[in-house]
Length: 130
Image (cartoon, rainbow, N blue to C red):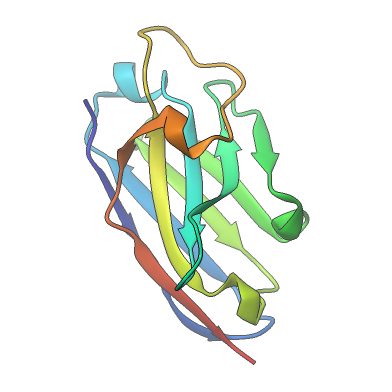
């Protein structure tokens, strides 16, 4: 089991940058075996996947953030990051980090499906003004 705590959200103008962090309570032995993801949910919309990373640090991005967002992980600090550049008003949402349900071994090829993620943080708000 793992607990996740996000930080780094805030309000920025369009074109600005933010870096989100997600600290995990798991041991290093366990944390590095999780596939991790960032999701976001805007008011009145469904939660959508943004970026995903597996145990080998292979990454997947949703089309709308490709070239602007970068997901990374530090398996020594047990922390997940999302660097967000060139932010747009449509990026405004609550951002959540999540850990994919763990089968015990290393996780390769992170799922992009929300229902495959069993552990969630409380979220951090990102607001982008035009």
